[in-house]
Length: 140
Image (cartoon, rainbow, N blue to C red; front, side):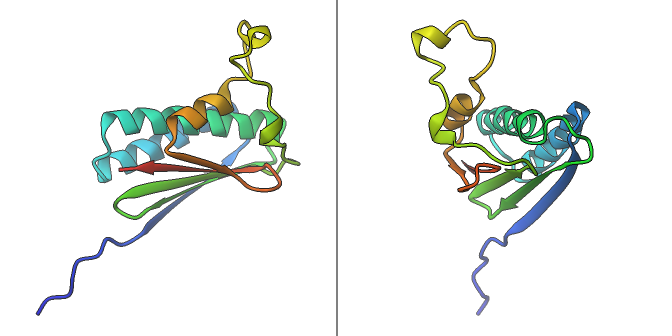
């Protein structure tokens, strides 16, 4: 009798300098995982948007564009879902006190929509207590 074939967990990690061109390495990893696990186009697009935004926020707001500080990106794939984490070396922030980008006074602002977009596109979004790490879940 053969043992059941349970999906195994696979881990991926990137350590990125806090520079805008680091996003290219992130995009390569997202594409690699999406191809390997046959992620749908919609989920791929959502992951690309959310992770680009999260890493950009970590670089700009968390690490203040300091190339000496790192952004750590992890992906854990278990066959049914991908859990991404993005962490920076900054002091963090309170994600519960972000201005609402849909409020009339914020509609014409050029910034301030990233966390809102991430929360709309990811299946689940969790910040750590310090506010310097975000965990994003996507069903595949």
